[in-house]
Structure formats: C-alpha cells, structure tokens
Image (cartoon, rainbow, N blue to C red):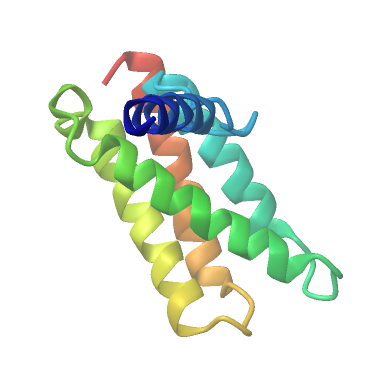
Length: 132
C-alpha cells in the first residue's frame, strides 16, 4: 500500500511539473534575441507614449516593468548576446526606464528621458539590422 501511494505521488508531481511548463503566456519571450528585443522596444514605446490620463496607465507600467525584468533575466548571462552593441544599448535604456518607474511611479516620464530612450531604441534597431 505504501508503495502504491509513493508511485501515485511521484506521478502527480511529474504531471504538475509538466503542466507548469505549459503555462507560458503568448507574449512571453521566445528565446530569439532579435525578435524579443524588437518586441520589448515596441511595447516600451507604447508604455512611454501612453497619455497620463489613461485609465490603464498603472497596469501598462507594471507590464513594462515585468517585461524589463524578464528580458534582463533571460539575456543577461547569455554570452552569445551580452557583448553585442544592441544588447548593451538596450540594457542602458531598460535600466533608465526601470529606474524611473522605481523612483517616480506616479510621475510621467520626462521629455528628456523619452527623447534619450527613443534615441537608444533607434540605435538598438539599427544594431539589430547590422547584426550587432
């Protein structure tokens, strides 16, 4: 009887662990650095340009912070991309925006920061086109 329960428990654990791997959201990172970077850039542009009086501003900012963290966790230790110019510029932009969201949650993104982020996003896109 004890053997039966231990096997049943092992089976249940295998099924649960297997199903946990299947719950990725459709907008999660794919593992394709170029595609993921362009998707993050587009999402962050949308979050930055959202009007201050938008009713879903807080949720969009929270989603942007989550995407920044996911991107950093996925690619920070990946040696194949960590030396690329697009990656270093992207990390600079992400750190700037994450710092603003952490320090000034209820304030809009200043125009100076928006302009700098847009410039960095353009540099990232140009570097990705070059393959760097």
